[in-house]
Length: 222
Image 1 (tube, rainbow, N blue to C red):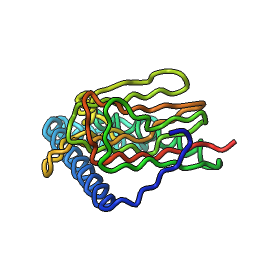
Image 2 (cartoon, rainbow, N blue to C red):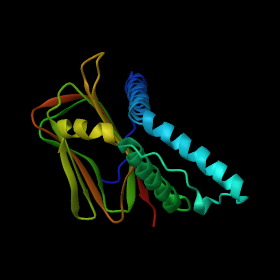
Image 3 (spheres, helix red, strand yellow):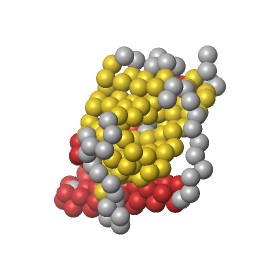
Image 4 (cartoon, rainbow, N blue to C red):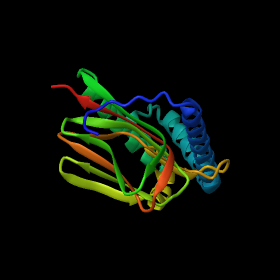
């Protein structure tokens, strides 16, 4: 589709999207809890050392009559976990996107397909305007599919569902998991920006009837 807008009124779409989003939120909460437990367990001894260093610094400052300034703060910093690092990068990227688009007019486009069969490939996004992907959500009975993203004439990535699953724990922009309730494979991607043009392609390695394909992207009006 090229700059088109497809809005479906097919039944049960809201239930499908709500179930997907609820499952994603549960998974992200599990990651946060896991990261906190890992950080707490691995740095307990280090935290004791930190407390001791803080107390020693405060006592020394009082004895000398000097106040501790932020530039001279002697307190050691706890190491940043991998998830915290990825989270900071994601937040910075979102802030940049918000600043860039806050004062510009956009056209919002949708792809909304339920029980849609793909035998070879399906273009989810095809545009020659500057824009960004806000959300891509797929539910499939099979994991034998890939997503290819081409922006500004360059292929940014072409990954299989299995590769997305491997990357998923390290990024808040990508979520890929098998739904334990119905056995479907869920993929969610958001926040991909481009300056001039973009094509996003769903390729099926076998004939697949996707339970749901939902895409939202914006084009900037000139």
